[in-house]
Amino acid sequence: MPVRRNPSRPTRKRRRRRPHRGTSYGGKFERFVALQARLLEPDGCPWDREQSHQSLRSYLLEEAYEVLEAIDSGDPGRLRDELGDLLLQIVFHAELARRAGQFDIGQVLDSIHSKMVRRHPHVFGRQRASSSAEVLRNWEELKAAERRGDTAAVSSLLEGIPRSLPALLEAYQLGQRAARIGFDWDRVDDLLAKLQEECTELRQVLAAHDKTAPGKLEEELGDLLFVTVNLVRFLGLDPEVVLKKANRKFIARFQEMETRMRQQGRRLAEVSREEMEKLWEESKLVVSGRTA
Image (cartoon, rainbow, N blue to C red):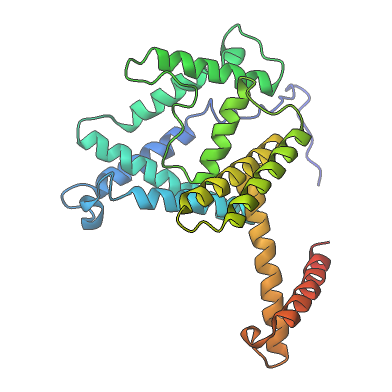
């Protein structure tokens, strides 16, 4: 039966909880930090106690890539779990540092909180930013000012891009940094022309048949790749995402070829080049039909 409201009591509007105002997340985080600290106690986990910042490097990288894979999968549950695994690595490193008397997770949080407030003066200060492009420009200027305040820092806009990044991501970030101060192509046609120029130079090196100068071939191929990455960036896309999608498409088409051969009781390796090309075109149509 319907519930009658008491007319003598005013109806209250329920307020939405603001996650960043509550304390529930803080309690859960503290519990997780305490768990990792417990694992590193003398009577804790032998494996955890043997680890160092250096030994955990590969795990940190692996977890970061698994987060990316979870994002690509579109599965929120999987993303939740992988973010947890990545968070474990951060807490683990912070706890190792605390035990070495260097810093603790609280200082990590204070540092990133201060940085985010400092880098968003258009939100937390009096500065104004009317577009995301302006925000990015201000961000780079603030980073440059911070570097100038650090006597150990090199005075370069490109400083701070980790040299340990995968080459594709490093090229993207280099182009991105340079573009933020106006060092960029004006039109996409200019980039396409540059791409054609690099292809021509590569053909010239290949035509020379100079096997004693492999460095020149590497150089021209590198230039071609660098311009291609910048073309993707100029068009507002992420080269990692673009290439990943191309990889997935190739896998789907190739596996379709293998499936068709198995259905005929044959192996793909036994097929002639001409038949393989025909099979590839047919597989492209099949896969395209699935994704349409």
